[in-house]
Amino acid sequence: MPTTTVDLTADNPRGAGARRTTAWIAAGLAAAAGLAGGILAPADALQGQAQRLMYLHVPAAWVAYLAFALVFAASTAHLIGGDLRWDRVARAGAEIGVALTAAAVGTGALWGHLVWGTWWAWDPRLVSTALLLLVYAGYLALRRALAERTGGPDGGDPRIARPAAVAGIAGFLFVPVVHFSVLWWRSLHQQATILAPERPPIDPRMALALLLAVAAASTAALLVLAHRVLRLERRLAATGELPAPSTAAAGEPPAARAAAGRRSPARVR
Image 1 (spheres, rainbow, N blue to C red):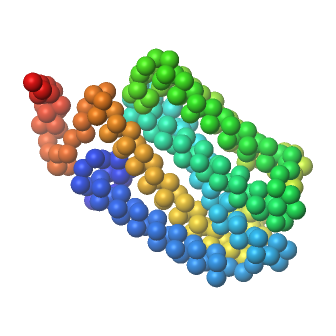
Image 2: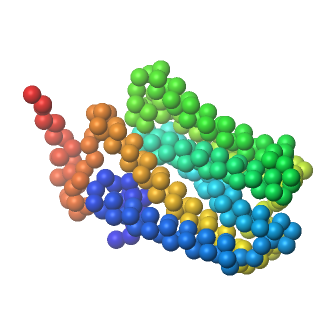
Image 3: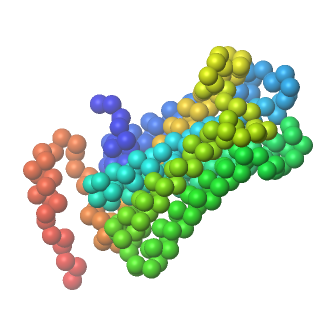
């Protein structure tokens, strides 16, 4: 059967197998991206070897966008349906997005130092990206503060999930500001390449290396997301805030699974 995100977060042998398969796919894509970016793709005519940082910088930024889009979608789903599992997905997505945005800022600073001669410039893209990082770092800080104030578990308490969902949705407004900042204001940062309105001004070998790097980063982020959600659910189950995940076979009848879920836990004497 095809692998799904449900399989990836399942705490059973099938889920573990799906995560191993995803890890191998991510490793293969990363190896292919490394070979394409380091050997196959030529150096840039103007920037020289410094341009190869693009194969780290751009995937980090784009997958951070995807992670924040996931926060937006999961937060919306939680507000509509009230399912706390969406809240856990939103928290994991925000953690991944913050880490990748920090990586994008770091690699961008190095790239700017090599090409512009400075580590930082008060450029619209750089400033808006730094603000995006602060916004979602604040989102995670808000979750922690609410957990400390309410005494509830982060990822298992509606008193934390609902305010966090509102913040996660509002924070996503910064993503289009970051992306279009190079068009709306004068910027040292180059404009879009792959998604340029006209024919992309990029060597096909560079484009292949970049697409492989984005695919590798996306697959690796999906794997980290699955592991993070699974870890959060195991932690909640260990503290009794969440029913222990079922390890029943995938083909078990729904009625049997429902009956199992209604059984009272054994008392420890």
